[in-house]
Image 1 (cartoon, rainbow, N blue to C red):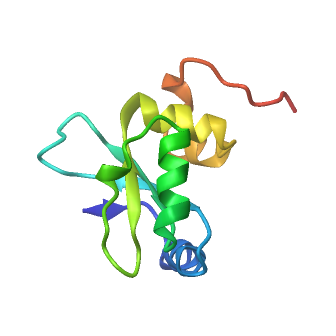
Image 2 (image 1 turned 30 degrees about the vertical axis):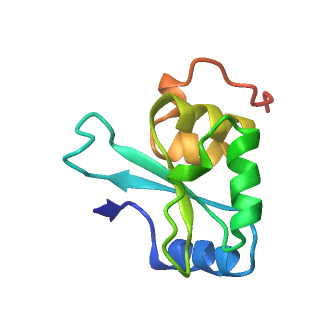
Image 3 (image 1 turned 180 degrees about the vertical axis):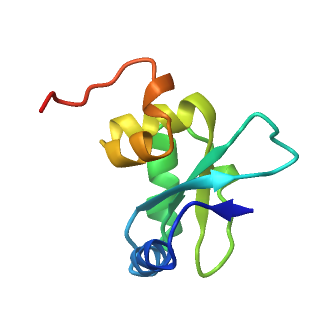
Length: 111
């Protein structure tokens, strides 16, 4: 079950995915299969070639892409989620969902 995001944010993610862009959305999440995980980041792209290449470039196995048309996506959780959010400079995702506090190292520039 996903929560903590607005319909507008979800629609923006869906629109970007549909356009073939890499799109990131982070939300709170409850799944009994992963009791210690409280958030997930979905990296979506309708172009499976682009999404597969992105996965491989980030050390992720493209075999784990959820091929659910029209919104194929890869789920990021745990330390890899934090690592990727930092790499992509998605600071608001880290801060909003309390992930910045557990991030091992932040490359965010000081303002």
